[in-house]
Length: 306
Image (tube, rainbow, N blue to C red; front, side, top):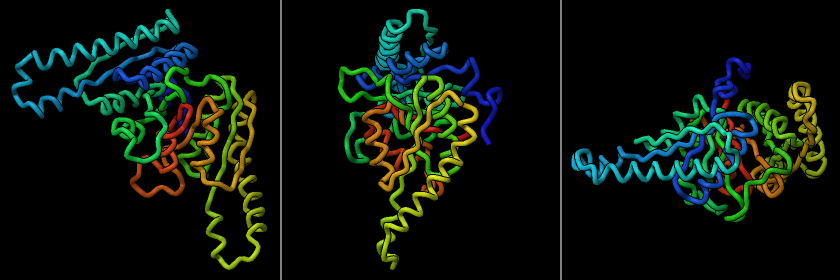
């Protein structure tokens, strides 16, 4: 059961949009997206940077603790990064409430801690590439361990702003985590004045060619109809709560990840649960969510149920 607005810390008026910066172009994209979001929702934008001084001290020992020539430049560099990000945000909205923080903590730990009370956490994503080895450890950690919603932002081109048009697209797989993603996706679509596309894609049926059933097309039609009915049922309550949102159902026999990646070319936001129905016990980030935060061409919101 989802929390009410008064119980959900991410919906409180005091909950800020938190964005992590590290001086990369990807982080700059994240600041732009986060600033637009905070401005539109009249929320505070909190810009944070973790210097990871603990690692410096672990590597250099007691020398780094007493030698300000080592510690001070690291902190100053962090202050310069958040100051530059603040200037970017102020150009978007001069009246935007902005706070900054430079912390000695590891950047991933800092963002995860903020996620408990943030409206959402925003982080820059790497350029779309194939291969799990391309995913940075900070992005993986934050997407996996945060609470609430984490948005990975990237633009298809280095000088292109994040998309502000197109539908909000949500992946639906029938899992409890997916229910949380549906609720957040409806809310995002309503706030953005955007249509919502609910995608139910599956590839399980390919195994049926080995099941001894001769005409798999009949089975496919039957399963598709059952999936359509299930999707209508899943969306019914949310459609009543958000009557202003135009909803399209997309039911497709395809690999869910590939199908959602195709939608990322035209969507302004992809919303998925942190784990799907096929996730292994103990996994915090499912394979589809994992792939989307690496490869999608639009911002991806990973939702963790409370």
